[in-house]
Image (cartoon, rainbow, N blue to C red; front, side, top):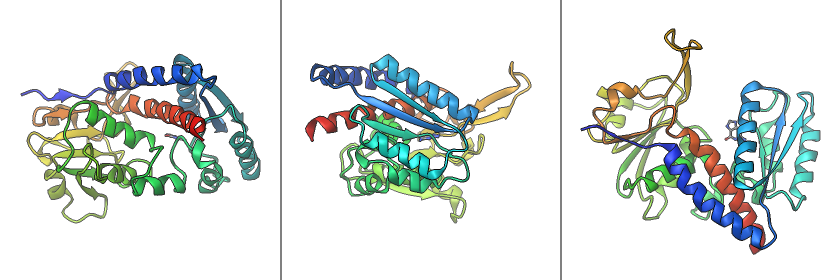
Length: 294
Ligand code: GUN
């Protein structure tokens, strides 16, 4: 039987509808959520991401503040800018676009963001709250993956979830979200990585397999369990002479072979991709709502 396709666009539309309602409630109280995005330097990919965030803010009625700083900005200057945004009441959320130029310590910059405005949820304070199940803000991509499963009616409780990859922005936080004591989580989670013994055996045990390693089409049909749910977080640009621009975006999963063996799968592109911005907007609205309650 053909696998169900889990599409980020469909799931994100439902979440945007809810956000529009919450934004109008805030507006009725005289509050407009505001997102400040700080970009240091002129990395073309980062410029595209920042432009996409600005566009989505405008579509939803969130104020968008772009702070574009030159690549020569010092760490002290950047932290001074963040402090300014921390104390600006119009700004509900602050995002510093990564990667930063090499002379700047990312960790020091993240720690300078007021945790209540940390819409990336990269600050250790927010990551700690997530681990103990007291999160207000959650990291966008992992929260988006969780929402994709919940909104698609995929039961997570009691399932064996195997996450391939242990990054700070996907694997580690996602493992925490899915193991929380919560009827929409309650999973048994295994995280596998480049140093895992019996790597393929563990992957084959997954009821839900989530792959975030940045290796094109790494997971093939022989590695997955029949009927599993597959979430592909990979976005790899590979050469493809048949494509107009000679390039093609593929995931970490060999979609064409795996799709016939599993019950549900996210395609690349069109799967997890749209969820990150969606959950960033969600965090911006949550941060604005938190300020009303203060
Ligand atoms: N660069 C690539 N993805 C992200 C993200 O989710 N947040 C930030 N701040 N920078 C990024």
